[in-house]
Length: 409
Ligand code: GAF
Image (cartoon, rainbow, N blue to C red; front, side, top):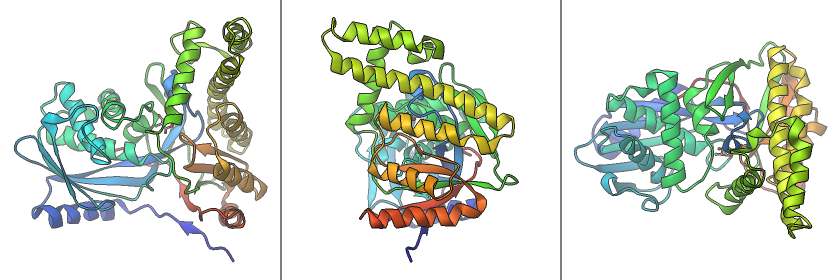
């Protein structure tokens, strides 16, 4: 029989002790403290954040832990339990394109805080994490946000104490990711890692960064949210994510709107006709017209699905959200074209095995899918997916059951 692999979340005290012990072993001293931040899943609202739209993520129990001690001067020394060797970065020399690999997320946050006028100097940092890496569950945002709250506390900045301050920290982490790590992502992942709440999903309105905490607790409803890490690796520093973002910006420009959020559901037909007209036969680029029509249709309908999903959650009609999840996946696969064979197989198999709804989560091109399943069907659905992957000759997937937990602290 095919076995299933489960990715456990560490107990918080255990995670903190791992980071502390790594710090002590590496640097021969105790850290000033240990901070941590969660990865996320997104229930619905994909590729909407950079279009000023709505998303509905929640923070996972899986967290990245950082043990930190300030140092004199501008030198950052970094060690990670997941990476070999000690890295060093001169904070004064950090600029776009100067730092490679995982240290760019750490140095990028220190750089962004400095750019905003905060007096951040060098530090030693040890990192350990149970957020699966490269799985579309925001391991990079978890690292950025853990560093953000650590530097906020160590430098007496005080932003982490209020939601308004955390909104500012979110923007600084996004700057770090966009400008220093070189991934042109939106702000959903950092927002939920810093502003999520246990037992709630975060309805995030990217038009003005406002949020609404929507109760999301499946216990008592006999349901569970199964996360399927397909092990098909993805990266947002790659070209496809940036290409989708560029498509949306081009469409907004042609439609003469600031962001696609300004296209309401009732305007969609007119907007698609306008796009076809300005880029199509007269504009002599019908291939571009077809692509942009698909992108806009996804974004506008996906924002509507977030609203539908939230309304069902608030009405306690959890068993009815599956259709919106299924429609979201179809739209991401067919119109936005960011799914892949592994994600489609995970989603289809989960549904056939009893899931109420399933979809890819995160940026796509690999990474993870989520399935809403009756609690008793968690193991049978996981087994069915693992068997389907084995039969298709794909790498064995990994699984976790996601509950909504607290933010960076
Ligand atoms: C990735 C990005 F980092 C987010 O900003 C978001 O765009 C997501 O893909 C797609 O919804 O996680």
